[in-house]
Amino acid sequence: QTVSYPFQRTFHFFKNHISNIWSGYIWLLDVKEENDRLWKRVWALEEENAQGREIRLAHDRLRSALEFKERDPNVKVFAEVVFEVKKPFFQLIIINKGKDDGIKPNYAVVSPAGVIGKIQSVTGSQSVVQLMTDSRSQFPVLIQRTRTKAMAYGSLDGVVTIKRIPRRLELFKDDKVVTSGLAGIFPKGFPVGMVDVINKKPFGLFQTVTLRPSVDLSKIEEV
Image (tube, rainbow, N blue to C red; front, side, top):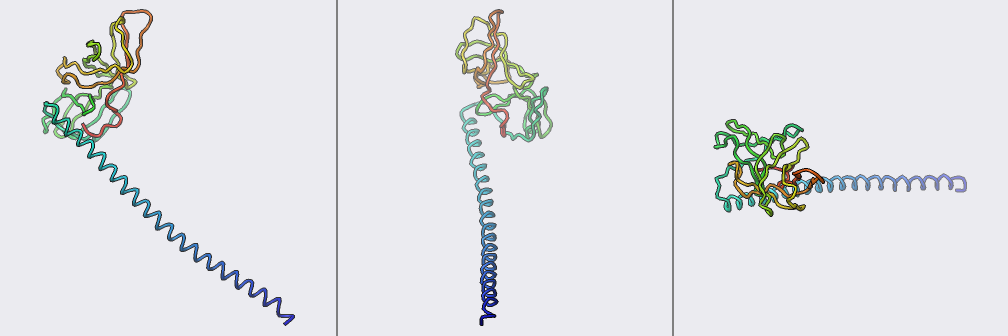
């Protein structure tokens, strides 16, 4: 017994520890499996939540469009944006409605929030829309508070500016600018944007302002 005791003690020590290690290993495997299962459930719930958010957002946009259709008497065709071309010289989007739906060049393109641009060209089932920020874009506008008529221009910087405003006219940041209806493209009174930056030099006859568009042109999905 004296001789065998150390060996027995060592044997029992390793036996108990190996048993504990094995039990811990099995427990860790079960935990990992449960963890993987829970993560898969989390991912599935996040996907369902994201889909639900998209459905709610689409519902809100369509409801807004329906209300817009009911309050504005002009005939409208609703379309979805299918492609974007945004480069210094070109600020364009492509929509999924065209000549077959009655769309023609120079038709106004708007949203319930305001002006987006105008139809540049059409095919049977699609149309190219020139955004109002396009460097070739120009259309008549009205500074609502002062009733001043002017022209709005797109630019290579992708912003909308109003040039040649009489220098004596006092303008303020956030003055509202709407369409004047004079060019026969946009109905009168559609929101264009708000005065953001006023460039009024100490000399000269005119001042220039940069607008903050009423519509976030980087987030257009329907028109």
